[in-house]
Amino acid sequence: MGTGVASTITCSIEGDVLNMGYVIARESVSLGFKLQNNSPLPIKFSMQLDSLSSRSRDQHRLPQFLASPDQRTEVVGTQNYSGQSVFSVVPVEGVMEPGKAQDFTVTFSPDHESLYFSDRLQGCKPLCSCPQKVSHHILLKGAAREHMMFVEGGDPLDVPVESLTVIPAFDLEHREGRPPPGPPSPEAEELKPILVTLDYAQLDPDTQAPPATRELQVGCIRTTQLSAKKTVEFSMDNIAALQHKGFTIEPSRGSVERGQTKAISISWTPPIDFDPDHPLLASALLQLRGDVKETYKVLFVAQVVTGP
Image (cartoon, rainbow, N blue to C red; front, side, top):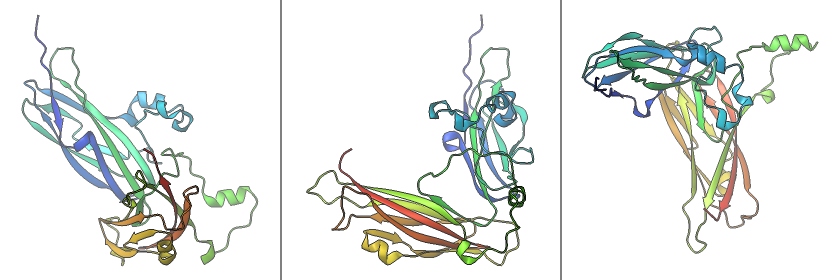
């Protein structure tokens, strides 16, 4: 009777999550990682994406948003409209000798805008007749935008589940018998919502608590496109009114270089006339200027919390 030997694989990715970040839709970005074979056995790898497995296709028969939160174990998120995998990896197959490492390259190639691209990569086992199986899992995540800017932070206002059905706006107008729309007016500019809640923890009424703080991240996506704009400029209005209500926004304006992000720090201390029985509401417009102009309506909801 033989003796089993434990196979150990370590990964260079912290937390086994590879976040590809933001990319312009229909462009691509690649990142690398290593798997290290720390066992005395050679290990065969055959890298597989959950989105391409039959098990994943079966699980997609029931939309995730129809399941309860406890049942949402699916890691396959938004995929490409084209049917081509949004993530790919090389090499796909091979053998890691004992004590050796293998380099892998993951490429993220989204064909449309979405914040919720995700998949799972797995597949390693000992190269022997022993029954044990070793499988390493890596969660892949990425986001894509049509334009060079993005804002992160705030409270979630949607669900990370999207339909792959695309209905062009002109089709909807035609089906409903409406006349074709004219050019949009400045007043009709779409305002993208951002919700920021702040909880001021007043655990001891005799002690001044630190301000409640949150953060928004403004980013400028690196792109291969030729563009006159090399930076994204941002500015937030209504600063004086926000300060009167106890908010501090820093910085309220600035610029971000390509491939970088900049944090907007938001802090709140209750003003003297604050009514603790009702949350305080305030709003401001956050404007981004890059290859296009985008405007976000930031809604602040602040309250005092007196218990754990």
